[in-house]
Structures are given as structure tokens and as C-alpha cells.
Amino acid sequence: MRVLYVGSGSGTCLSRLRSLRRLESDVHFLDTDPAPETLGRIGRFLGRSLFVGPSHRRRNRDFVARVNEFEPHVVWVDKSVWVWPATLRHARRRGAFLVHHFTDAIHPRHAATWWSFHLLRRSLPLYDLNFTTNIDDVEHLRRRGVTVELTHLAYDSDRFDAQPLSPAEADAWSRDVVFIGHQEPRTERFMRALLDAGQPLTVFGWGWGRSELARRYPAAVRDGQISDEDYIRAIKGARIALCCVSEMNYNQTAARSYEIPACGTFLLAMRTPQHVESYREGQEAEFFSTPAELVDKVRRYLADDPLRKRVALAGWRRCSGDDYSWNRYMRTDWGKVLERVAARGSG
Image (cartoon, rainbow, N blue to C red; front, side, top):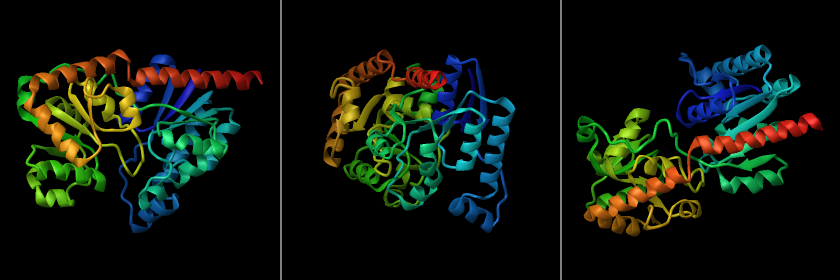
């Protein structure tokens, strides 16, 4: 099976690519990360607002060229925010079965982000099969006539494990409580509650530099994107790692929901149906619904190291034993792709 995988060369997209290459031997990769470009104000406007700027033209041109060159049986597109419908129609005319994978909400609760997904929403009906990790979008898409399957967020078993940090790394990254993720108002309310209560906390991620939290507690904030390597070090160095799901994306889990326990670190996550389904509360992870509950549980588990370590170990066993990994979910999802490709061929 000849496959063209179209997506980013980093993050969870790269994890899914590696998993797919374990399943198929002939997988070609088109890296869609933007090349360094010097764009004027008009170029940036065209890209952000009209989706016809130099970056969009280059990536769609490269997409068409790869389809023509490799003649793939399957094209797998990860997060189709820049793909023109005409590009997908061209791939279909060349005989490709089109698959789309998306881990965010299709209608994010943020105006600029919502508009940036315009092409994605337009393109969904053109795919033969869509996968989304957002449970709330599945029925909505099916009512629109979009072919969609629910999949899951996961951890990369090649990168996340319970091996301890080196002594030097442990010394550099030791923290009591960490949160790693972008700033959102609801998340900030939880973080501020901890700091107002005098609890130790370090926040890593994009968007925190201009927040009220940074103004009130500058020593607690490490603004900016953290590298993939430092992300793992920060999780492993923490006694407690927090997981707040995104209100903007109205999701119930995050990749952190599985990456934190996979590192052997204690997971304290927002209480959602999917989190409660993934881990036994108080035994394999802990959950919170309110700022007061978050503060109480941080106090409890920082004060009781043996209990915290028992829960963290049980969470690691659940995460690894039930195989909440991209390898598992890609096996399942790729199986669904093959079934539909076979059905189309026999139809």
C-alpha cells in the first residue's frame, strides 16, 4: 500500500507518522511546516485571512506534485487547515483514498482560531474518512453527512517512558507542581488559585507572558514554547503534573492525559468523563472540578509522598498496560482505513 502522509514534522503528528510506518513499508512524507519566509504585510494578510498567501501556494503546490510523483493509494492529511479543496479534488481524481486526522475542535471558541479553520471545515466532506479526537464533534459531523470516526489522544511510546532523569537533569528540572500548556482564562483561574493559596507552581507554555498571572507571580511563569525534550524533562522532574483540558477546543482529554502517567509522574487532571474512564480516581490519578478542589488535592499529595508515588505507579501501569499509545490507536484507525479501501475496491 503506497501512502502519502501530509503533516507537521514535529509533535503528535510525527508520532502518528512513525506509528504508521510500523504498519506500512511504503509511506512517503510531505512535511508541511512553513519554510522560513519574509512576508510583507499584504502577504501575511492573504495567508491569515484569505488563505491564498505564498505559504499556502507553496504547500498546495508541493502536495499536488507529490501526488503526481508517487500516485499514492492513500493520502493521510493531518490537520487540514491550509489545504485547498481543489488540491483534494486533484488527489481524488488521481485515485487516492483521502484520510484526515484532527485533534482540535472544528468550531473553536476563539474568533481568530475559528476563522483559521475555515478551509478545514470546507474540506471535511471531501475526505473518504475523517478521524477526530473530539467526542463532541462526531455526531455534529455525521448529521452533516461527513464520514467520521472517533479516535483518541495518546502518548508516543518512543519518547515517553518512566526512566528517571540523570542527576544533573533532575537537579535542574525538579519542581513540586507544573502545568505545561497554553494560556486560557479558565486555566489561568485554576493556576491563580494555587498561587493565591501559597502552593508551589511553575507554568510553562505559550501566551502566559502577558497574563495577569505573570504580572502577579512573575517567578512562576516560563512563557514561550517549550522544546519537545524539555517538555519531557519538565514532566519527569515534577512531583505533580497538572492537566487542564482546553475550553477553547471543548475537549475532554489532552495528550498530557497520557504523556504524564507514561513518564511515571503523578497526574492531577480536570475531571471529565473521558479522564474518569481512563483512570480510577484516587487510585491511578486524581481529578478536580473546582479551584478549591485543586488546591486541596495539591496540598494533600505534596504532604504524602508515599501515597502520591503509589498513585503515580498505578497510573503508569494503567497507561502502559492498557496501551494508551499512538501505536495502539494508529493500528485501530489504519485497520478502518484498509477496510474502507477494500470495500471501495470491491464495490
